[in-house]
Amino acid sequence: MGYAPPGTSPLEPIAMAQEAERLGYDSAWAAEAWGTDCVTVLSWLGATTERIKLGSAIMQIPGRTPSNTAMTAATLDLLSGGRFLLGLGTSGPQVVEGWHGEAWGKPLEKTREYVEIVRAALRRETVEHHGAHYDIPLSNGTGLGKPLKLMARPLRADIPIYLAVMGPKAVAQAFEIADGWLPIFWSPEKARRAFGDVAGAREGFDIAATAPVILIDDVEAGREFLKPYYALYIGGMGARGQNFYNDLVCRYGFEDAAREIQDLYLDGHKRDAAAAVPDAFVDEVALVGPKERLAERLDAWRESGATSLLVSTQQPEALQALAEIAL
Image 1 (cartoon, one colour):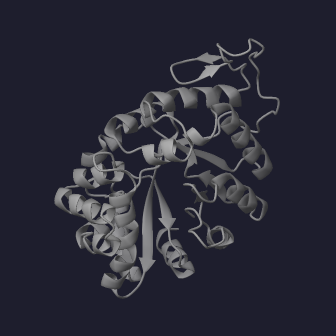
Image 2 (tube, one colour):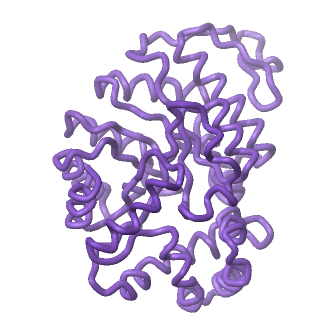
């Protein structure tokens, strides 16, 4: 579902998710950046569906205390009858410091502490945590704070936690502390090289990779439609020297293109940046073309180590085609 683009209503992706439920899809995932939030969208979706799981991809760690996230997860899970999937991520320094006003710090350590606190709260343990990033109860406050435990009784103490991470160390940590991983820009052929040993996940761990899907006879036109999206992330979602999406594209072997896209984008030439996105990159990380091409390409995803496919599309007919191919 992503998040509603500027000027659009979140009711549009919700309608797509309702159609996905009708077609037999397993889950629907809402995102947030600095516009529409994901929790409200998932609440609305849960109230208007019966079966489909409700995933956050992602709830931003710097935007909520871990205790608040545990409250939200427990509430959504209760209201939906046990359908919630908690996807978490740190976002990047631009959003963390520029929007949330939080220090970027050490995201690997912060994520570990955050997950520990959320899990303890969902188990209704008395929450007391004194780490490098979270101090609960606050040690240097009024002195009136006391350890508390969640008043609500969660439907499930073990709500699945997914982490959206990209670096090999962060991926290895996700395998250790989470129940699933939400990788972006998944290349079936190169994921193992770029992310580390994706086969190292324990049994039952869900690698839920996202694929933009364009159902279209004109493959070139489909690629062109997606290129501004990739240019935004490769070029604009970060600064020179600190853009995790750009780093990932470099690890995929597109170093020269990644540098050119970023230079063009940050210099204000967004259209040229989109034009610089290689066709080969789009073909690797997206499903574009007629139904037969999608089916052929899907075989590579099945063999890549991914265990779930998150379909990102604005086309009801693409949802239908993928359902006929994969379900």
